[in-house]
Image 1 (cartoon, one colour):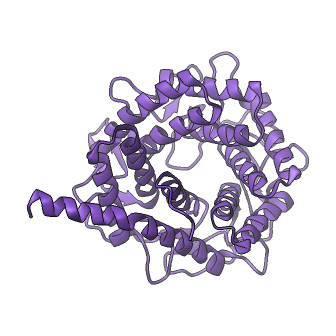
Image 2 (image 1 turned 180 degrees about the horizontal axis):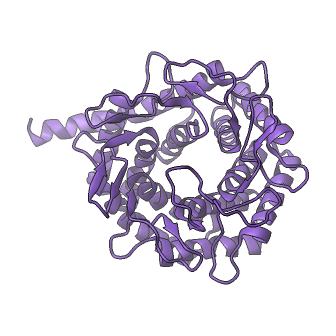
Length: 409
């Protein structure tokens, strides 16, 4: 195929992209409306397997519910569909009734299927998503109670998690905010005091809160987080992100997470733009391009983004999970907007083609967890679960629609 024909095909794919992304957003939202509501115990199902079978007795996590809250609040602002607001309110109500700790404040990590506290420790990552979801729900509804909870959780993080010696935030605490030995976010993580992942989503949450309730202190907190990323978390000169740290910011990890790399590139820039701080924006844009280039080391020839690379034993984890693909869409679009370089535009189109061919579940809806090196569906994974949510893929759709300035249809 000559260059002219190839260029024409790419142009056609680009022109078709907004309508395809809009349709995919609606498909994602429809899946959660049709399959994920728990009409017996309230809220949403805690787990649905890859065959779309609801696991009725599965625990229900605060992160999942906060992400549902954000997704449907943000979707409503785009679609103005009352059903999307109704589903956001369903998540909002469940969080307040069952996942909020009335004695010590904050959010339980999980409850059982009946709403009884199951794991009551305080993970700052979960509170960050609580702030993120409540801020977006307030944006959609102007419900002052949602904003009050977002501000309360912000103050809890500031009071208990902020490290006033070395900077940054400690990851986790016992229910009463006392010391917790095991701070891991998941079983695959290192037991570290500070993590990239928590700091990324605290920054995201704070920026969202700032957009609906700005204050000088909150702006300074976001600036401090952006400086921590630039000075501690982004590893120079590679511009990959280190994942785990001691209290005094010694790196305790050999893993490169391509999905987190590309997510951080565009998201940190977005946080800087939210507070309109010129210096932060300049640094974040520069870092966004360098981080995106580093993440592209994990791109396969088919357009999919590999999961992780272990620097210690030089092992590539040859899996392609759903969420790095979603983040790649935004990351490539952001890099293209910053530079006009067709390399990023083409990478976006190719990544979307990979998603369509291998990650979407056109028959049943939603996105599968991921595929292996042979693009076979990974076994025994969730469609809905503690970690499987509508946040990454719906956000990718909403971000692309906003960036491509497509009217909602």
